[in-house]
Image (tube, rainbow, N blue to C red):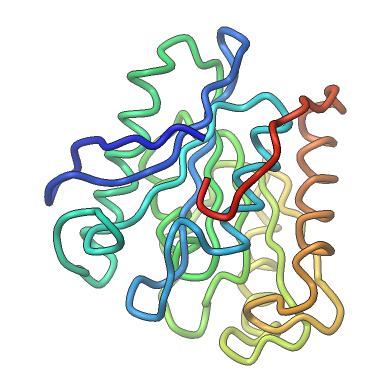
Length: 226
């Protein structure tokens, strides 16, 4: 997929962008795990999320937060990374001005950043939040959560225990006008080792339901860095 470089608040940001072939196609932004623990846009889960959206006709962008890969800047404990995500959405909207909708997806640290972006950008109409670390970061800003979406968690997650995430989700489910769904992957740890296919299956089924089962698009063969 095409490599892109776009302007971020702390310098250039490196990404991969899959442009949809259909005018007006929705946009999806995919956010990677914690930069200081090896998180990059080529993380296996981020990579598979990217293609799950691309195969359903989205224009999709995944990128490296500041200080990761060829992205300039330094880790900023979340504040700067949220600004990076906003810049990524701005860029995607600029190159896809006719996009009719926008989604955000994130894994772990990226889920925390993604949900913050969701609160700030009313055009985001759907989200995928994978293993949100509710014990490590404050998610109380989701009051109320403005859009419907899916949380996915492993029942063996020791980084962000299922109980803590369930407490957050039950609180969100009380809001009117949105639908929060929660999928639990059996035997999956925080990194979904040996369970990535099950994870992506849940995400894909949710997207198909929300998108009213569109025909999937054939995407050229993938390569790990592509």
